[in-house]
Image (cartoon, rainbow, N blue to C red):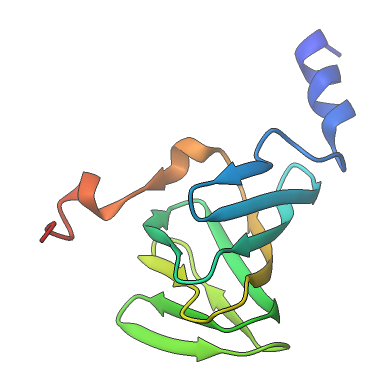
Length: 131
């Protein structure tokens, strides 16, 4: 086994560098493997994650606390605690916190490739025009 393979193997199940603060809140990777990543995502009140697309992974979001306003493709839904949604690969999606308390979501990513370079934003793709 090469040194790189050993490093990848030793990181399975341990939090990755994907954890950390964002302008909209905080992400903590709880566990990850070669084809999945489980994260705790906290979104500040009146903030949200910009629209994005992933081509090699699907996502499941479970609301732990707060209210999530989820846009997935052309569908927009509100999710309360204990509700969940599925985001298929190659689907434009975003999540917002319309409420007054932090929104906490468990996010399960599953796919053949989980690299951040598989994330495209619609402004980059010219799918959404800025106001």
